[in-house]
Image (cartoon, rainbow, N blue to C red; front, side):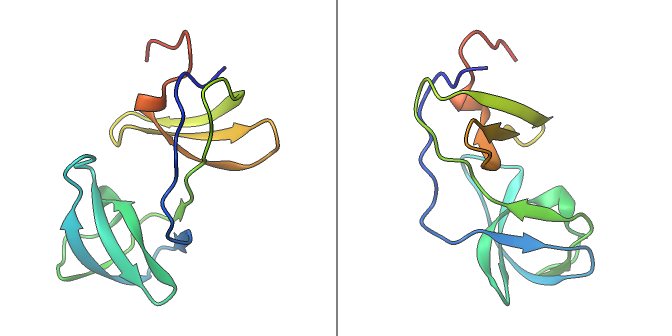
Length: 113
């Protein structure tokens, strides 16, 4: 598939959370309400809230997540690895072998999902 729009990534370095990790939970994202901002010993990033237990202001990670966005330009060739319609993001691989999240709003050309 071909990316229909460009996607710029955050300047924060990506982090990975694993089941059992304890994180500090911050605000809920206003643009992507399925995500909350978490802080770990290795950094901070947005994580799907459903990946955490219900406790606050600290929570335990229930589902591993590699928080890596995939930058790209309109016209880039992408392979969708996994779709997460609940969060509004897809896990994709580009033609150079890099992988990461791409928002649905950067929907591939000709993709109606």
